[in-house]
Length: 164
Image 1: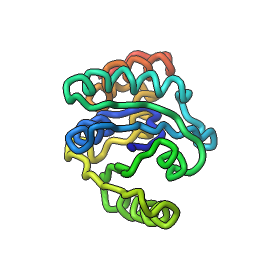
Image 2: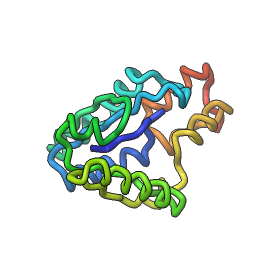
Image 3: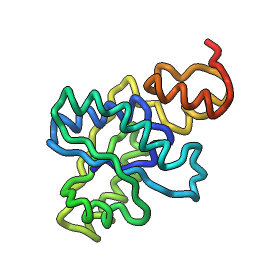
Image 4: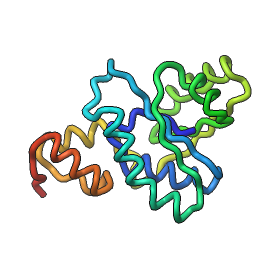
């Protein structure tokens, strides 16, 4: 299971998914439905974008990639999906501290579900959905950070064309 808000999915997320495909035969991408975060994209829009960008990956790696949404506790969703592993990407030490705390809490609630940390590729270590949205909102291209379909959807949301 690879959970997140994916608002929107970035090339960093895709890198973690691609690498997860070398480790697992089946990956469920869990899209968090948390309206308190005031997402830019609806859950349905995020799922649609994720499905579009992972379809070629699933075909080339022969990994089954499922995309589903959830609310509430991740471990409850993982249990319902019969996942035995949660994959989390780490960009920096600050990510590690937060993710370690979450992993330990998840292990306390569901000891049979492991957490696996994958270090982000250097290329994406500074990329976040929040920064991508801010850059696009301010009129710049986010082409290096997201798949083309995501950049187009961001531009449409903000009603802008990117400046170089």
